[in-house]
Length: 536
Image 1 (cartoon, rainbow, N blue to C red):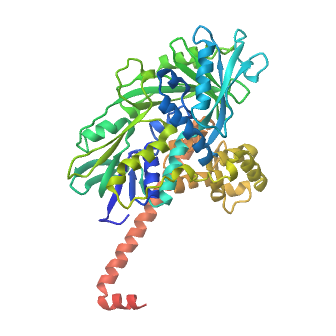
Image 2 (cartoon, one colour; image 1 turned 45 degrees about the vertical axis):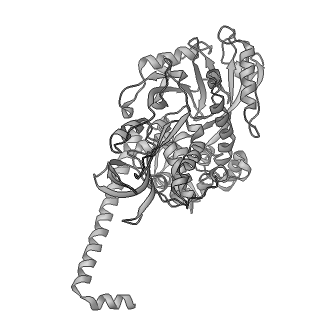
Image 3 (cartoon, rainbow, N blue to C red; image 1 turned 90 degrees about the vertical axis):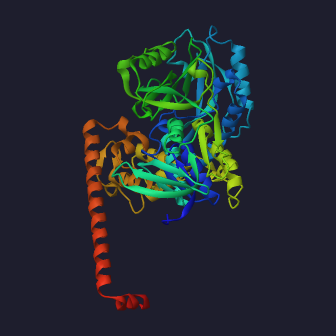
C-alpha cells in the first residue's frame, strides 16, 4: 500500500466478520487494510461448532428472521465453498418428556420451509430399529427425526475470505494491533504495531470498521475513544473430541433436561466432536479454556443417549471460545440472541467508525453486505451491486459444486497420492490443490514428512499463501493435523519454522544492506551516473 495514501477502510479484526467485510468492500472498489492482532480466526471464529446451520433451537425463542436468514445462507455457502462446507444429516432422538413429537414436527416443518432448499433434503421421521443411526443409541430410544444442515472448516472459511480480499487488492496484516487512533474530520490517523517486533505503521483511513469480536467494546473505549451504543455479553462455548463413537456419517442433536441441546458430530474421519456449552465468561478471551465441569456436562449429555458411556478419560482434545453476543436482559446464556447489530457513528464533521456487535459464522456474508449498505452513503464511488453471493471462495470454483466428482477426478490425476491425503487436500484447498502440487508428480516431490501426512510442500504453501507462522497456525487452524501428530513431531515442526524465520530475516537483512550500499554508491558518483541510468 502506497505510503501517504488515505485508504477507505481500516478493518480491525481478522475473524469471519472482519475478513468477510474486507472481501466484500474491496470487491466494490474500496481500498482496504485489515489488521489482526493474532492469527486469522485465532479466537471466536475457530472455536465454533463447525456448522453452517439455521439454528433449529432458535425457533423456540421466536428468532424466525435470524433462522430464515441463516437457512438462506446455508445453500449460498454450500455453492461458494463446496470443498470446506459439506451437507450433513442430523438425527434427533425423540424423548417425550422433553418435547412432544408434534412440537418437533412443527419446528422441522418450519425449518424445511422458512427458506427455499435446492441442495439439502428435508426432514422426516425415522425408526431406530431399522435406521443406521439407531445402532449406538440406547435400546429404549425407538424413534426420532432426521433433518439437514452443513459442516464447515470454520478457520479455513476465514482464511479463504482473507485470501480473496488480498487477491482483489486488500492488504492483510496479521500479528498487527491497532494501538492508537485519532479521529479527524476527513479521516482517522491510526497507529498499527507488529506484535512480532514492535515496529509501527501509520495509516490514514476514511472509516474504521471495528470487527474485533470479544474486544469490540474495549476497542471503542480504548484506541478509538468512542462510546458504544450497544454492548456484548461474553458466553463461553466448549467442545470435546473423542475417538470415533459411531460408524455412520450422520450427526446427532441431543435434547437435555435443562432445555439445551448438545451435538455429537463426525469429525476429521476418525473422531467425534461433542458440544457445546453456554457459560457466562468475564475473563481474558485469549485465555479461555474448558473446565472440568463442562467436560463432565458434555459427557453426561451424550450418555443419556449412547448405549456405551463416554467418560472424560476418552477426551483426546478440546476447544473453547468466547462468543460476543448482543447484550439482552435474559438470565439463560443459551437464550441470548445470535443475531447482530451494525452501529455506524453519526457524529457530524468526524470520520466514522462502523462496529459489529454479535453475529454467527453462518450469516457472516449477509452481515458484510449489510455493512456495505451502511457505508454506501460515505463512498459515492463504491459499487452498489451485491456480488459475493455468486463469487466462489478460493478453491471453490468446482463445477456444479459437485465435490464428489471433483475428488474423483483429482484422485485420477494424482494416483500416486494416498487416498486419505488426496481427500484431505481436496477438502482443504479445492481447485487450489493444483497450485499446491504444481510441478510435483510423486511422493518424493512433497519434501520432508513432519508426521501424519504433513509434508514440507504444504507447510511452505501455508506460509506463503495463507499467513501461517507457527505450528499452531498450521496444525489447529489451517488443518486439524494436531489430532494426528505427537509432541515430538510438533516440536520438530516448530523448530523447522523457527529456522525458516531466521533464514528469511537474514535474507531480508542482506537485501536491505545491499540496497543501502547501492544507494550510497550512487550518491558518491554524482548526478552523471543517475543521468546515465535514466537514459539506459
